[in-house]
Length: 179
Image (tube, rainbow, N blue to C red; front, side):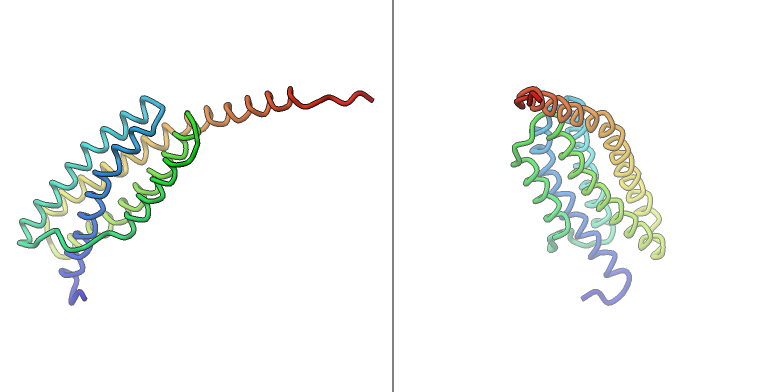
């Protein structure tokens, strides 16, 4: 059990390290499931960024003379599991993409909260070099969330158009009553 803020900070960093490594494994699967080239490319770019987040965390652990291992982030494990369930659904095209964006944004919001927390801890502990690294990652997570929001507007509209087209086809198939 953490004895003080420094121990809690290290514990939270280990949690983030686990979370980022889980994402390194999950993002290629999300990219593969995406039908939108723009979304697939976004997942691939975020994979490279996530690898950079892992590198930054390793630098922080080195500076703290601590090991990043030893903790499994159960929150990210659950979010990744939900993302895997989305991929297993029989959604197609823009509907699958809309579901993937929802799963990805839940991940981003989790990370934004976690990085915000460790930034505040690093600030209180006076870890100036670490604040810069953590803030850089936090800003990248926020940018990714904004990109997903922007992309979702277009993809959600496409998914909705697909629903409307299916309804029109279904309406045409219904037998018409003659009075």
